Image 1: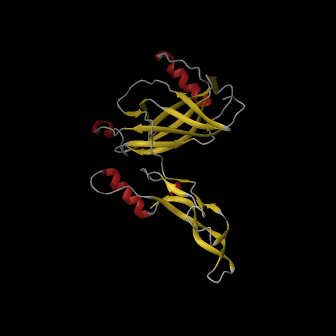
Image 2: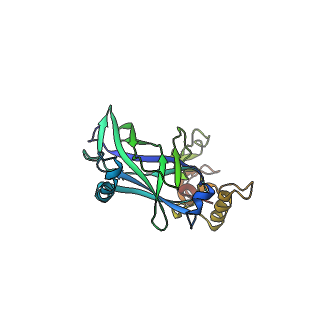
Image 3: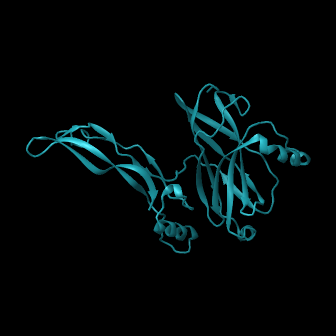
Length: 263
């Protein structure tokens, strides 16, 4: 990995445990905001007496990558898709044993803006142009206060609801004898979990929103999470032989999943 190569995708996975009743007492709205930053300068001072000066400099040294609101009584794995937001420069990153090292910091706030403390361990993996690469990350150690959110590491993480490739080969499924063109196409599929809270990017129905809340409270056993399914579809034109051996061009509806959502 070199600084001349382009980082195409970065994901940040983390696990947050359910806050205790005492900790939730300090969150009047039972919701807190989590923000992921890229620290532009990997050199910082960790001494307690210098932290105030460091806080004043952070606004110019950090780049906010993503934000997410989390219910205090919820727990589980969450996925931040950082996309191409990570800045790769000699100032923001460094190379070590072929790995691109990026300094990230996670911050939590109440809705009123009060800073919360995080006890975290994390790993970020990404892909680079021309092959797979690993992007490691470090984190700052902050003073522990009353409100804590535990963040842990796990090797296999279930991703959120997203669209992925599903290549359909008509010869493989036995349709090549009557379909002339195309020989194959990408129908796409929707995979992953509909994790609480459901964002508008997931195109949730009102029913799915209510179901997600009911599932997250845990008060009603047997209520599942909403399902990750196609939300919108695209058409596909097929050239094929009809029953009289005539070549026909016809457009078929709902052949391609164009967008996924939680329903």
